[in-house]
Structures are given as C-alpha cells and as structure tokens.
Image (tube, rainbow, N blue to C red):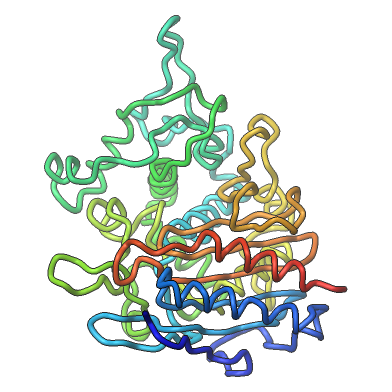
Length: 392
C-alpha cells in the first residue's frame, strides 16, 4: 500500500495562476459538501488506482477548490504531488490542442466543417458502399465527432517496421488508405486516427506544425505557463512520470501514447499536450466566458457555442465538435444537454458546464508506475460531489 495520502490544502498559493483563488462559499458552493472529494480521491490512492492527483474546481471565473493529493512519482524515487505538477493530458489534448486550433481555422474562414478531408489531403480515401460501389466522402465534422468510420487506432509496431520511427508521413499514408468501418455519420467509433487526420489538415492549411500553431495561437495567447507539446526546461522538471519502460525508468515529458510518441515524434493531434490544473482552469474559464479571459480571446462566443453543440445529423451519438457529452466523467447531476468534457488515457479529465458556470479539472497519473490503474469511478463521483455542492 502507498500509506497515508498527502493533501496540499486549497489555501496553498498557486504560482502563476491567472485566476483568483477564492473560498467555495463566495461562488455558491457548499464547502462541507465539496470537501467530500478528498475522501473519494484518497480512496483511489489507497487502492493504488492512482499514485496521486490534482483537482481544480472552477466557478464564476474563480478557482474555488485547488488541491494536490498523494505523490506524482513512485519510481525511481517518491516525489510528492504539487499544485503545479504538469501531466501528460493524453486525449484531453484532442480538445485543448487540436479542437481549439481547428475551431480557430473555422471562424477565420480557412476551413469549413462540411469540407471533404481529401480537399486538403489528396489520397484520403472515402467510404465505399460494398454493394453499389458508391463513394461517400469523409468530412471535417465526421472526424471531430468520431462518426467518420476510421478505425480506433493504428498498428504501431507494424507501422514502425514499415515506415521507421518517427515517420509522420508514413502514419498519414496508412490512415489515408486504412479501412473505413462504416458509412460516415451512420455510427460512432472513437478514433485517435480522426484527430491525427485533423492535425494533418491543420498543418496543410497553416504551413506549421500543430504544436507550433497551438502554442502561438492558443496556449501563449491565453498566457499559459506550463502548457505545451514536448515540454522543456521548468515545465519538463514539473512533469509527472507515466509508465515504466524497458530500462526500468518511467517516461517523463514524453507523450505516453505510442502513435503520438513513436510515429509522430510528440507533435500529434490525438495526444501530446502537457499541462497543469491552473492552466487548464484558465482554458475552462475562457470557454465558459465565450472564448475570452483576462482580456485575451482565443475564440468568438458563437464559435464556442457551436463547438459545445452536438450537430443535428449525428445527434444520436452525443459528441460535440471535439468533446463528449455522454460520458461517465461528466457525472450524473450536471445537465446532460449542456455539460461537455473529455478524458485522457493517462488519468486526466475536464468537465465544463455552461449552465451552472462550473468546471472540474481532475488530473491523475494512473499509468504510473504501471498501466494498471483506474480513474473512471473516481471521476464520476468527484463530478457528482461538485455538482451537488452547488447551492446558489
């Protein structure tokens, strides 16, 4: 067992936080109800589901609860979790990196959601009806809502053997030609390949990498201190490790996702962003405020509303543009018609609810030291506690 789990109190100053840290009562949260999250996260640590976590609860443009729990690292040495710990966001990268960047291109007239992918990536194959031979082209919206029919993932080792590592062009060549499992818009299949394709579309339009584009136009625009692809310097020193590798040491500052790391070299549409709780809280406030925070704007209000809305033609599948609406991470109490969020394989999650003007950022490195941890139950329970603590 990991022993007694440590908690860094919410009164601990959050260095670099651009959002005021206030009492729960001042933003309509019952503090006694809210502190129930401590027990839920503590249970997950005691059960060795996670070594530690950081939780930020945002309401009315303020951070109302901010705590670090347990440890950020167990091997090779034990290091305590801190409020500034930087996490491999895994698939939360799809939202804060790829989606926000893509939506900027949409509102700037550089891209349309109904555009065919092969307009930007020649050779990107459509779905072909096996009975009639008729082609149905995959669109940008299909990729963003996971209704394209692309397979969930790619055979990483086979791709390395075929193309070498890293080889972003080889990976995209595979995606252009791989199977299409169903007619676009007729089914839902969560796929990392969708967002790697979006990455390549963005790079074709802008002429720069996704990592460069998102850094300049999203992360730096908001004044984020520790949000980036391929972290270096102080940000790297703050990174929580993930899974142990063959040399017996964990990955630190290198994306855990195999396709993102081994084929895309860290610049990837499906994973690769590293961030911490206070930076993500700033993103959440910006989205809750229609794309602007502290006088810095990344999206227009109508763009944010469009992003948070499930497109009518794929309403049955519950996916907004780049985010998810129907998911355990959103809990049972937030309005299912307004709340949206996403999780990451490493144990990260964001929940944003415009109706109650609330966001929940829960970051846990469940894949350290081994990929055998769990965070699903904890996420749901934490979201329910936060929702239940809203009293005005």
